[in-house]
Image (cartoon, rainbow, N blue to C red; front, side, top):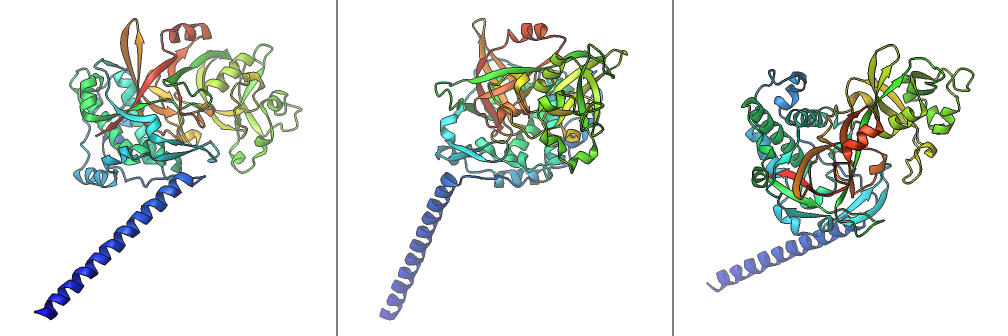
Length: 444
């Protein structure tokens, strides 16, 4: 009995020592990992993307029409296996109580500064007010954004970054799950010819995590609400050939320009001096697509897309393709900026994309441009403001970006529409807020 008792004592002591050692190692590992997260200066964040299920998300893009919904099929539910994978890859809900630091990067992937996620993001609820958006336009933009993840994530790993929402336990899979659920809900509601449930704040509060986004602006620490700037597509007259009136070109790079980076040597001012025109030192290296006025060019460069009404009666969209690699400088007037964009003809308004042929087709009224590297592509945002003494809620998706958002944790740019003039644009946006309270929606 004594020997057996001694063996039991020895076994107990051994197990206790093993557990103590394991706990100590675990604590040491967590401490070390937390220090790495806080101190690591140049993170290239990525997240493994689950293979999307073949569903209406991937099949519906070809069925969308602008005239109606007669071709819509009901959304096919996500498979149980996929949902199970989502659960396993989603972080514990308790992670929201951890004060995790996030390293912010610029467009060249250089570390700029760190922020505490809990200082910017916090759990919340939407006020019980109808959420405004055009159902057809939101559905189109959501499907096109979801398809971008499915078709281009291997070539564009930037969209796999969890970004700032990762500090709240939100994974890339959660973002995809949110897009899938919203697409399914919209399609079901449209098929039933009823107002969508996504316009009901109570439905949203029940089915989504609502995360309030407090602005973080190092230049203005007192800013709490998000700045909501507006952009647009302008229609401009133009010519296929150079004339006295239409004397400012927009150019397209040749396919060989992907290896020959000659265009990165030249500023906007160099280009406008005539280096690509007959007699210029780089004549023949690019193709003139159209000729505008100087004002037309500056608006095309600023907005990213332009609809040109040609003198021969034709019209076409043109979108920015590649730039000369020179940074956009905040506060510098447009005509003095050195950054210059080369264009391509496109079939719709285009948003984010790692190359011109992959860019997301977007719709006005439901699209935000934002910091895709640090906030993330496909994040659903609701903006709350007061108009005429009544609360207003406007929903959209981050499906575009721009030089002003790299990095930028305090601003979104709202795609307001297609306008004939700056005056028409100004009248339209005068009804929209300059600042608003912002919320992210993440499917529970």
